[in-house]
Length: 97
Image 1: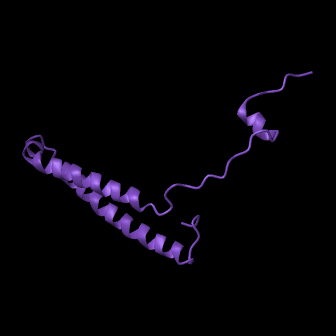
Image 2 (image 1 turned 90 degrees about the horizontal axis):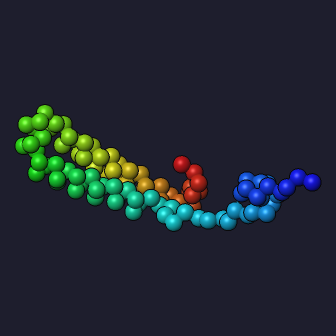
Image 3 (image 1 turned 135 degrees about the horizontal axis):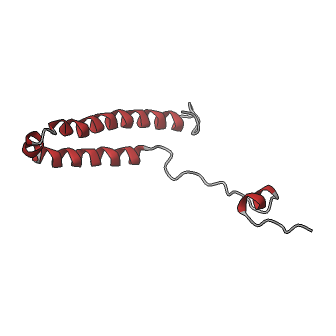
């Protein structure tokens, strides 16, 4: 008689393991986006104070990277707020994107 496999995939196939239904902690995404915006702002301030050295090294374009990240973060924040408002109003499901 073959030995019963004990790997998780086999146990799941035999119905011995059950996946718990776990909901995500943050459905809105707003705190994550705000965190990203703050990190881009901090990076922008740091690079702003280092702009003379960046210019001397030919890396002055680095200043525009956090500006772009900050701007895209604001667009993401607008999108997440709009999406979350629609979800709360019942006009959209939490799984729809």
